[in-house]
Length: 349
Image 1 (tube, rainbow, N blue to C red):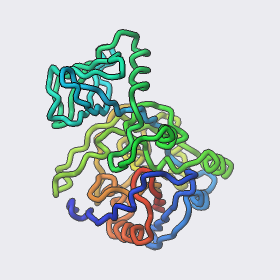
Image 2: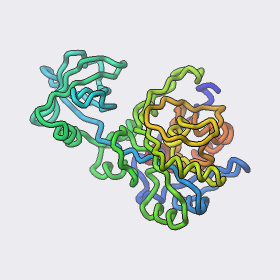
Image 3: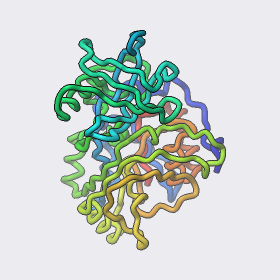
Image 4: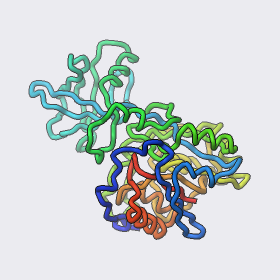
């Protein structure tokens, strides 16, 4: 498989700038891998495909307000700073992306807030847009973290051209988010409402929570035609023993084990035993899944509609079958399904 196998024309009007009014009223395209049949439903109809004892694996990562705006010393130029990951809590070191990057060099200082109450010094270059910042702040670590939250805003994807609205803070967070650390939401999970979760629970569907703190590795473009040469950035993952036990029991009973989102699929495929069971794990993954690939844990998945040539599209193509997935995407465009974070969803059985 080559990069060009994952290209398609996506009309701009199909990019969702707003979510459905109610989370579970997004449209749902259902793909049956065994019959190659495609159905058109609403997300709340998802419950019809699951029975007692089936398991939904969720990513409970929580998005933090990672996008900040500062001013460069002397020139006052406005600089966007996107917090990626904390490197050292004691020294307040962070990996970030800056824009415009050409203006930001080692030794520069950036000032944040109307009162310049937070200052950062650039101490290293990491990539073309990447920098390491040391934040200078008088106060405790807890006060410093609160200051980042106060000054930051919800990091909506770049393709959403409108301004961030107060409602986005709640819209861009799953209802089961609890472990803070992501710079983007695990978007398949955004479709679940409290009402739908309760209905699934009453039906006897089990939930297994995992964590993958979504970083920019998920979105970095693939720039090589030979996919085997693409390197993913590492992202932090956690699979608790209790979740592994729930999943392994369902595998043993030949139940449906559903990965809610590509982040969950990457997480569980990063920690598989030789007997194709899920192992508890806490660490990092840079796993890149593209066709052909033999999946070990999940036998169905929920996902959104993804960008042309993205690693996310490559993974779902490996799961559904490349030709079937591209057929589904062409049908989605014809039927005017909405794409990306706030878009519609797909269930692959």
